[in-house]
Length: 201
Length: 201
DNA sequence: CATCTTAAATGACAACGTGTCATATGTCAA
DNA sequence: TTGACATATGACACGTTGTCATTTAAGATG
Image (cartoon, rainbow over all chains, first blue to last red; front, side, top):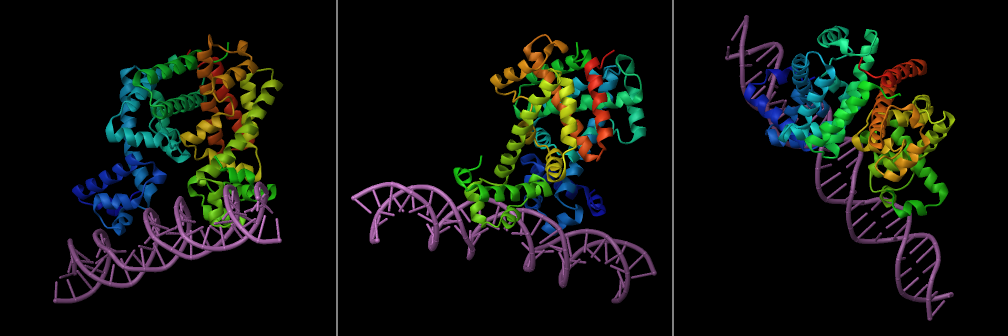
């Protein structure tokens, strides 16, 4: 987590810093990003960076968390829009992510093509944060479980794991192969179809 | 790919080098590994390392590829053992991976908890190498597709993508949460059950 | 055997990145 | 004005990387 001094920063300066951070993580993935670049681009002395963040990772996860918050709103919005149909929500979310533009797109691309466990875990919170039971229950309540072939909450949890696995993998494929929106969506829909009806005859 | 000089090395020296590489990548994930450690441990001068490998990644992927080759044999063996039942094969493979011991285990753990797209892509070849059509067809021929709810080869390809996604994700979870073998297998089987019967009512 | 040629080995080095720390500066209350 | 605390600053020690000029080794050839 960013240090208190970061939050104490005058908005203007903080924005400048955030932009520099974002720029760097849009340029290259986490492991290749350099603090030197960030401070140069934000025009702050090197020591200051460490006044605000623990290290590179800290800055990265700050950005990621902001993104996850936006995703959570989006997910609730879509769930509502599709009357709790989680499959439709996933498809719409997928489409939203892969059609992101400009800097956001590059950030996401670097993010998805370098999905370490920690990053994935954090990003997965977009859908529920299934570690925190309370949040999960709240999430489940927005889902129309009538549509789902499950018999208890545990199965719902595993169903979510399956869906997020496949979603992430499909996003990664879309980014890595630079698929067109149409092609990517088509592929993902096909996978969802298979998932819905079951893999076994 | 390693350079020719690597393959020209007398076996003994090559083994020493491979062991040093393996040791380093078992200690820490790719991004944290250091060539300095490798050359120190292999007792070769720094310049020599670059005589054999392009860079860190090159050495890492060499090791990974060796692993993938072993996996491919294993997969064919298991497929045969279970009469082409891909679900049973997956479960057995899952169990094999998470119960790996000692250095291999650490190598795999670092591998799975830091699954970039490239690593995943390479590891995925354990199951077919579904980019090369010929290999894929050979793989498919070993699978009993009678058991599967698919109507053409394209659907089989997507089915494989789904299964490998879920498999990888489950392995990652097992490593990250340090699940016992029993617990991990139980979870994975549950997911396979859901996949088989379908997610939609 | 002497010589030439090509392959491989070696380690010093420049370039770069990281995190720290002693010092300077700013702020606010007493 | 002073003291106390928060923040800013940038030089620096340390570690890592990839290169390259120089040696050394291994054959081949006459």
